[in-house]
Length: 521
Figure (cartoon, rainbow, N blue to C red):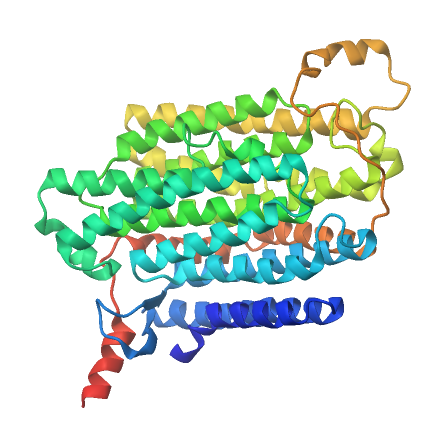
């Protein structure tokens, strides 16, 4: 079973190589990409069952090199769950992009470039989730950086190149800080393996631990778009093609959140910065949703809600109890799926109406009722309306905070409830204007939303395009998964609870140690 672990990364890289070689054969590229992500999803599901039932993580030392010299791939409940969810999301977005490419040709997403870059991005995401040492995690971030820059600038328009440059500069700053922290950790502890770091961190002076902790936290907070380090995201994501924006919004920031969870829960549990995290979480929630309320462009609204809801995950992480960590993982899974689905739905809106400005789009309920439903369901889910997974996740976070019961937890709960209500308002305002408003609505309605006239890109208009069935089907499939998160909330949350309990225990390399003992004997 342990032989399956390296395939999570090697298969996407091999698929990227084949897709690059088959650059002039669209169908071959599509077949390779779809097959690769499907196989990875199946492998991750098998590994999730194995580690959940067995209770022990799987670890493999690549090339047989011993710790701390070798690269260790580490699979536990958390990493396998996130790979299952990520691979499903990546597959759905890939099918969406296939439909878009078939309808538009290579104008928006050049296929010969898109598929290899997309699979390399997938490999970077999967490698980040199973990295057993900090340097391998750093390599994952660099893989993501290279692939995401290619994807975000597809089409080579002026706006995409400009936002791509901002994105890469910010990412490089984060990477430099991360690499400096790795060098300091290696100098202080003689290893970058996370298990050994966790064992040896207590040997360092408290001040040294705090410096190392703070450097890693800042580096990951930039990746996760935690306020005030989230300034780059709302301008970077909306300019990319719809499928690229969807996968970025759903997954890339969650890699940063995942890195924060690993380091906070397992490396620096005895040297916490939880008060700072709580303040950052509250600011991220409130500032993000206030930014969303000031937008008139659907992609920008969703980008700001993305920032805002990262605050919920940081909030759960800062509570630092098994219950809160489990709730954070559940909310993270929910947000990956729901946020991706919303961006796909907005991609359909853009093709149907020729715009994503809520000042321009009207009457979609009458003209495209299916698209209306595909937007509405994940929108009320993200807003936290019962009984959807958004409500379940928020309730679990608030329950964990109430269990702690300190005054700041009460403040955080009020902030979380307010953010949820404002999220619902922002998304339903967009729904009301874009779907319910008719072409002949009175001038009074226009006057009430005139304050949005100066919003960025509110006047952008594109041509209306045909919507292939596969685009609608992939979006509908993602909506079905968002509903499944509610229907099967019990067993999914049970797994997340077990993850929360295990993360606060010392990291182990049980399988690797057993294999080494067997090889020596």
